[in-house]
Amino acid sequence: MSKPTLSLFKKLASSYKVTRFPWKKHALVGFDLQGNEYWDCPNPLGGRTKRWVQMIDGTEDDLTVFHQNKLPVQWQSWLRHTRNTPPTLEELALEERRRAIIQGRARALEEEREQRKLEMQKTKEEEQKELAHLAALEAEAKDKEERTIRSTQPAGQGDTFTPGEWNPISTKR
Image 1: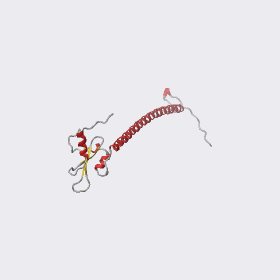
Image 2 (image 1 turned 120 degrees about the vertical axis):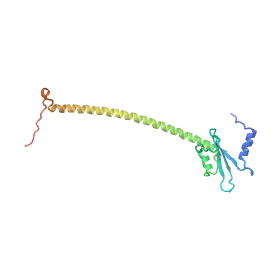
Image 3 (image 1 turned 30 degrees about the horizontal axis):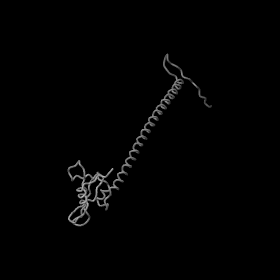
Image 4 (image 1 turned 30 degrees about the vertical axis):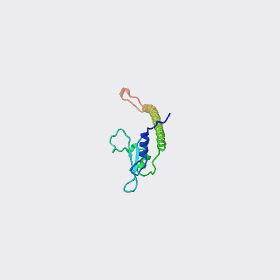
C-alpha cells in the first residue's frame, strides 16, 4: 500500500496554514482524527493567545454552531488553555484505542450482568415453585391433622351425628 501523494498546491496550502508570518494573524496548530482544524492567533491587546476550532461537519451549514461533545478531550483542554501543547495524532489514536477497549469491556460486563440477572431470575422462579410445593405439602398435612382432630370431636346432626372420641384426663387428688 502506497501513501497517496498530495498535489503541489495542497502541500503549499497546508504549509502556508501552519507557518507563522509577520503579516499573517493566525496559524493552523493541528487536526484531530475527524478532520477538525484547530487554530490560534496572538491577542492584539496582549495576554494569552486566542484559540478556536473549525469544525468539519457536513450536517451543519452554520459555522457558529459548536458541538463540544464531538471534540476530543485533549483538544478541548487545549482550547481552554489548560493544556499548553496541542495533542498529537498518535496521542489521539491511542486515546481512541483505549476508549474502544473500555467500551468493549463495558459491553462484556453488561452482558455478564444480564446473564447473572437471568440466572438469578431462574433460581428465584425455582425457589418460588419449591415454596409453592412446600406450602401445598404443609396445607395437605394441616388438612390431614384437621381431619384427625375432627374425628375426636362430635360432628353432624340427626342421622349424620357421629360421636367423637373421649379420653379421660387423670387428675391428681
